[in-house]
Length: 244
Picture (cartoon, rainbow, N blue to C red):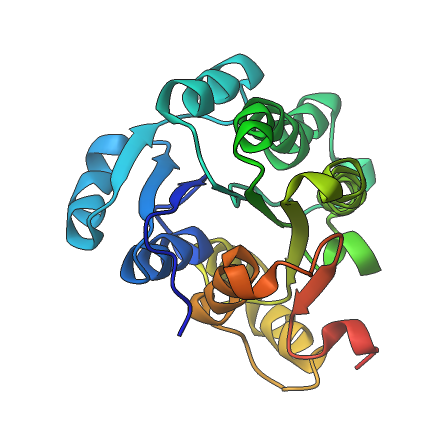
């Protein structure tokens, strides 16, 4: 069983969906979890339930995100999970939307990593796990900027792995496919049964994944058992990346 006892973990967007599953599993495996939420008051009951601490943070602010890591660290484990999606063809989007998508999905990853790495260097230990998306590897019709941001997360993570591999620090990416989360349900509500059928049909498994299935992969990459795994991109997508 994965044991994270004594490890301090920082999880962005840790109150709902995949982030909540990660926070819950980390806490259950002994980690001291600090997670972020847009509304800390609303997330407090969940934090109390799992024995974690929640801080209110909008990760679209680079300065606030960096300060959140510095003020609450040091952390042995960093999970960048917070994200927002897009459901429109590129020609129907505008610059304000581009900036918001890039700020939350990509620049926030820069900010947390920049703040967390010095302490990891001092400890000669660290686990960085960034949640991207299969869209970042395969592209996304109706989500061009989102896919671009997630593709950037993948390349950034591999670069961080190269820069820090000799310091006891690993950096890996998990790429979920269609996972049954509030974000996905919002997309299905807008796109209807046809969209849901397309999502499940794109997987070899023929179904939606669960947040806990993603969390299990993240917990493994955060563990000592994964010490020789870095710079990798793990799809948790029911085989979507295999060309279903």
